[in-house]
Length: 334
Image 1 (tube, rainbow, N blue to C red):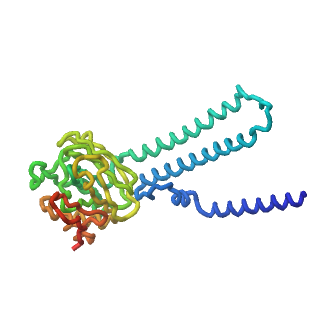
Image 2: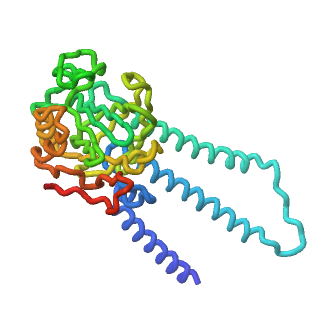
Image 3: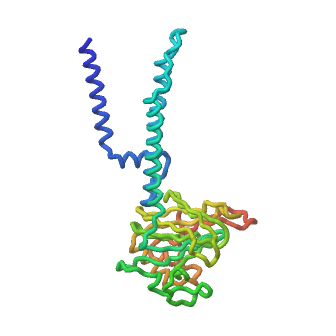
């Protein structure tokens, strides 16, 4: 009998050892990235932090669920009715009450602490970001103003170092050291015929200043795992505008949307974020600057000059003509 017990114990130990080897073959980061519990992977540093918080919160919740289920089933089996005798009643048990209070409190405190850390990282604004962009939202499209960026030699270009456009007359430029009282004139504007494309450099800190010209909108890129409302504090006011910062870690094209019901064509207020290498980003802005702000076709011309697809690839304009009898068509890269 004792040998059989040893044999069963040996098989259990071998199985447990094999399982341990398999589980430790992948790092915690690897299987966390594979779990995700339905979340996208995320293509920014901040998005990755959000995903990791979500994953481990789910793991914690499942672990607590297993403990609770185990206690419930144990009580059902251990204290099932065997006869008519009333079982011993337990009350005023300080040890049990202390555990039932302390353990959940520690779990909640840990989750709260980690949530605050991640939120602080996401809301953090650098004093010297690599790129500054103002996002202007209006019914029902977007405008992107590149106010400052790192040049080909790593020098800061824009903001106080170059000419700014006069908002009343974009053809007039004058140096203005009091940023952001006047917008930098490298900008693109979406139309009902062309999706606006926001080009940003990979592995660089990008700070966004959101500005609304009419109603509340919301800047949302699903792969960033982030969105933030664009509040209309006034046409000429930017001091109270919402700001946020991110660092893209993967190149590619990602669809962006307005996540706040803003009117009739809210569902058609899309844009595209295109994350590229630094050299391509500088080449694009150089071409955009050369074309000037008054060329209505400056966006797709600059994209083509920078060696990119001249039109958005993740979304396309919707036909706004109510009398149209044909479906919206994707733009070609001609």
